[in-house]
Amino acid sequence: MSHLNIAILGFGTVGKGVHYSIKSHQARLEQVLGKSVNVVAILVKNLEKHEQSREDGVLLTTNFEEILNIGELDVIVDAIVGCEPGHTYLTQALEKGIHVVTANKEMFAHHGEELLALAKKNDVTVGFEATVAGGVPVIQTLRQLLQVNRVRKVEGILNGTSNFILSSMRKDGHTFEKTLRAAQENGYAEADPSNDIEGYDAYYKGVVLSQLIFGEKPEEQSTIRKGITDITADYVESADELGLRFRHIVTLFKGQKGVQCKVEPVLISTEHPFYQVDGVQNAVSIETDLVGNVQLQGPGAGMYPTASAILEDIIQISRPVNSEPAYVVYQEEAANSSKWVLFNKNKKLEVPYDIKVLARLSDRAAVVETEEVERILLENPLLAYFELKGNYQHRVEKVNV
Image (cartoon, rainbow, N blue to C red; front, side):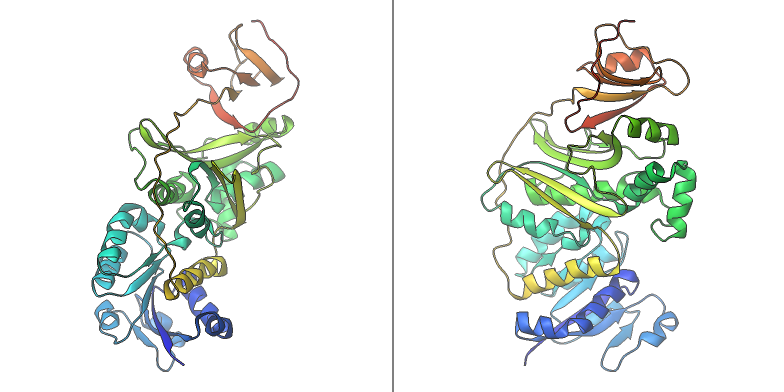
């Protein structure tokens, strides 16, 4: 039986998950591919730290050059973080004619176009399913849809840490700070969680999706990236009483001014597909012209969900299909949402008389319908406001001030 030889760069949670999954699913891989899958090398930072992981026939090294010099190396799996040295390593691998699979969303958001072009030039493949939503097969689904369908818009909960915090604040009634500490204690948030809670991680994933769907990155000047750190327990409680839930959502579409990307906390109603997506789950809603709305949900991170995405890419590389989507020009000018949830923490919320109020929970919180939210904000500079997604029918009233 022939072999598929693989090297793994990085041996943290993701790298170990890939290694263990290859061993535990070897029989299934052989059945699907008609060949065995062998891990022949692992790149680590510290040999002593991983000495107990050393196996006969597997090169354990801190020197990437040793991995490049392995004869008959088929695939390199990138399980390290940060733009460098991953970008340099994968560039060298592609130039040598080696397929690569990466889970590094930050690096791929910055260098994906370059790496894909280099792979095409050298007749090899870049797999990047694991860069977006862990075990949720977003990339493969989009590749299939883009053969015929035109994607109008994508919405996604793409960061499990933020979703866990917002869900837990609603369920437990705790402050943002206390919930964040609990997330860190349970391993759902890093010691420095800013990448997740400030929306950078979700934005990188949005960039990857933009390049896949539209063949270009979002317009930087019009990109919105807001974190969740300003959401208070009072906001969450008030929203819950209105039947609404906070979600940190990526919205991606192509308008007349180019690809638009928004990463921001929003409020959603019971009719929205993300209403029941709690905890560390990820979810993606893809709106297309033919099939309609396609929804995917599952674990967005972790050892085995990410390893699953990487193994699926390895399988696609070993039995390739047409993986290059035909980019379509579908332009839709962004329409500002006509429904907003407004909070005023310190004093009575003053809503202009000509603004329709759909619900008023108290004198400090209201759901309004307007295309002039900026006017309200000018008159109430301390206001917190969130876009409302999904149909909303509560108690309708017209308030005259």
